[in-house]
Image (tube, one colour):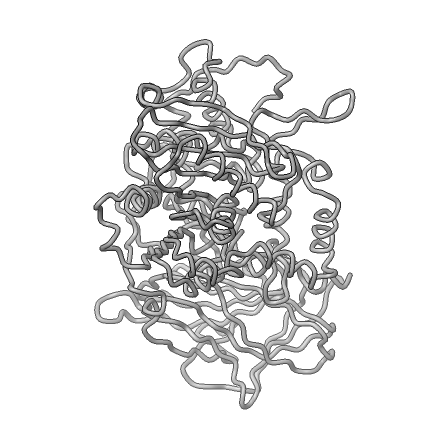
Length: 615
């Protein structure tokens, strides 16, 4: 959005701009919203607050605004927190004396604060809810002034960002206080996406009076510590993106203590303090409190999530004994629900529709399909049908991907099979994945370089393309064997006239490593390789080993991220291990070492193997 000092006229939103949001999502990159998403938010807010000088919205959106205005009162209040910080808010109060529930929406981690999902607030009002949306403290656009100091946008909240810490929990309770006074609601629900989803879960667990009746958590986290620091490896790209997406300079957005923690995280020092700080902000830390309050909680995440990887959400979900639902989708952070929260669409956005149905049942008391849902439902990558759009050359989904309902996460995996890493595979230049053990071999590579084998091409953008039918393709002949190691199966046969393998759950890798350095990072990738030697990624996960004795063996076992993937008949599985991915910290960079030799081997008694979950 433009600087509030500028007097820029807002132009009308076109149908083509709305179509681009539907196609490309909300994010131009991990640190930038698309111009179309920004323009739509500006136009919708200007229409709602009456500052628009003429019609700005497409007919369907304008009709929605008119419908809500006819039955509700719209306001733009400021809510004062316990410490005097002022929170920018937006409310819709239904014009009725009948008690109605309220949905409270803490905004996500976005420079536009509460404005980006104004469309959803209008939809909630039409469904029969009062609405209170607010920007969490510190979030939102902040503009430096030529004379010094800063000017905040109207949707920017005061204070500094607490990263879903105790101040944010208290702010959520203050929002409940405000809602009770303003609306006298029959029930209270929280709905959040990304940052707002974590805050929603934490307020439900921490509100002193236990006033939250249901939660919807979209693109969420369960354990913030393992989301950002796991297996000895820091998720640097995710944190860098978040710090760059607050709406202003970090010196303005974070207090000195948080700036120190961020600096420690980046440098890889004092990590015990960082872990404790992140764990305090993890809903999983308070699972017992959530269970005691029996708060119905709806989760929606993606298989290839790069900000809050899927395993930690699944682990949190499994600990909860409340009424619960876990949806897992193709793509990356916010791809499934982002556009559906921001714009109308000719086809329903199922991730959003199911989230709203959850609220309708648990808060409005609607007799809908929710009681018949299984607790778990997941899409299978990449089982959608597509056709090529001649205008763009991109795939367009013509039939959605298969979804599989499960009564619990434990039912996702029904069996496992073990593939042993061997010296020579079907392609003599690479190792093999076989059913019989082989020890004594070794594969060496020079560590310290990013390779063509990567988790994603671009943070968030690669997953958005997946969601829209265009998963990244990897030419495996370009994998730099001097900087990585590869093991493959032969072509796999169909099983019972179906796919060759139905990968379902969490793969696990065991291998023995030695290095010429005293620490090493290993990034394991599992690929589906087509007959033409192009590949799609199934899953991945890094591991960092420290306190190695140079030249001595260390056997390690670690879990890759969960996956739901069908490997077609005639395709091969490929396991790739390298030393560096742009998403993560790596041991050599941390040590100030340019390169080292990494050796992967298989030893007697601990044969290197991949355990593949099947369903």
